[in-house]
Length: 191
Ligand code: S3P
Image (cartoon, rainbow, N blue to C red; front, side, top):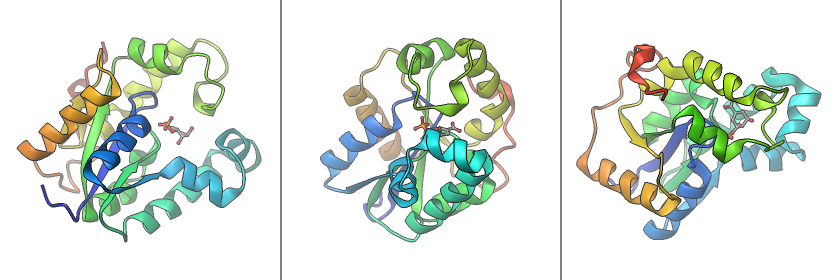
């Protein structure tokens, strides 16, 4: 594991990216960057407000700029927002200076972690389990394109951090620009 490279946590909402990222940063003595928090600080508004005033497109443009900035730095643990993978340029930039790790969880686990949370605009509006399933299916090619995958079901954040470190030490299949967004949806376990 190259200590100068960033460690970048990707994955759906509720897979534990922020909690695990903080633990990893503390253990490794690295700085932690939460991309969503950075976007909020820059906008002077929380994410639901950004979605309301600028729409999802406005949020994605802010997210893109935040990715470009952090990708120029090294020695960071970066927790991304769940939708960062939707733009292949984001994945390419994060991959250029970091080791990418995708955290996964079943829809039921995700619901148990984020259900009732009003901070996530994409999960509002009722029937959260169906929303989670639909979004996971649509996004699964993007998540499955990340070489290193760590399943988080039934694990606390410390155990997930252990698993991430083990996966990074073991090394994974290297991401290629071609692999991102091209994987079969079935490659992501949905239940
Ligand atoms: C989003 C995930 C959120 C946040 C925004 C959009 C997504 O981050 O970036 O609400 O598109 O999946 P978390 O994955 O940290 O919840």
